[in-house]
Length: 599
Image (tube, rainbow, N blue to C red):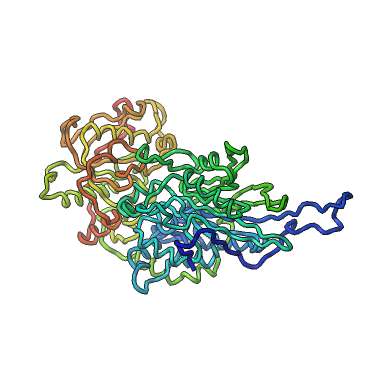
């Protein structure tokens, strides 16, 4: 049963039947040295970890309606992870392993969306979430909360929590009124040692402070999210005082020490390295959130000089982290002698038929749902060139968003202001075919659960916003080769942090340095003045500071709703029955070099 939030403190749990490992038991008497002393008793165990599963149970892409594949031939899903986990348990003994997760579990695929919105787990007698079913069957011991756990609101999260046979941990997710933990901060697991004292492993869960702004509508007044280092400094000593021989942190927070929300919050978004450096008593950290692959990183704690081992497995179940611990019994307690980590690739194994069979019905329901035809398109539209060209498929998103905001502001004091819209290329493989259009094809344009807002910006603010966005392009002098594959993602900026803004015309001169690239900024043929006022239709991630774009987070909010933009677009197609680029497609921005178009 799930851990009761009111009685979690100090709770411990056994992992099941004990199994000996080579070198994990006491040495026989005949192995004693000439001094007559026995060699120290040693024990080894393994902690397995996943993160950022994002609703991936099966190796399936619901947006393409086919088995998942990418350029590196990665595989995804808990069914693959289950096979790897079973193999490690067989090799090392189930009683000498633990399995934990670092968050972002219930959002990301149409499977997870279906059981949050279409056939929600919150309904009376409702279904059990497929992620809960799979993780229970695999035998997870604990999972940290991710920021995307809050996307569907607290009731859905609480329903998921109740369906899990393991605790959802969040030491820095607190009740906004009492500041008491809203979820268990930690759990202590006991590992049986043959002919010796149990090893007590403390697992501390930390989530992301950015939830306070990214999901403000769902958590404001209900929960608060203090910093990771502060809460780790509070709870790691508590775990040690409760007898934890080993302390592992499961942190939904990257390693870079940066924040996408700038100075809007005093707490760092990607704080895992800071936790390792600043908080004594941690042996290892399972890292999440950043969608990076880090087999092993060693960080020195500034207080004790001890090494802390960090590992982040690749997202969606593409990798499984293994932390291997060696312990020695001395002075009446277990002490960590060494820690190492690495990752296993899930594309090396088959899916576990126990998991695929268990969720076959749920999978079939979602496949049928996403393949419903909801309209037609007059022409094919693809996002392949969207990162460097103004293409119709991004214009389509902006058209629907702007139209939605205009309708919402109609009759009000801002109804006469021009409405602009921002959109990003979330997937370069997204496409709308000519002819029949299905839910999955429309949903593929917008894979995130973002909602829509309207914010008020001046012409001067808008220019700075566009300049910031244009940092995305690699500086390329006139006359040099302009290879589309090398023009974008300057300084690691992801596609989703480049905004194309519709309703304006402008050039981006990539021969110039960032900050002085936007030229010819016009609206309705007239040059945009600094004091002009515009309404920007913008997603809640960007409006709340995601990407740290200037001015937008502090801009006046004129309107907002709780409907996912993806659903807004799906509804738009359902109601109109057809998509015609003649209604919205136009090349309003372009890349230039010294005034000459790049393409």
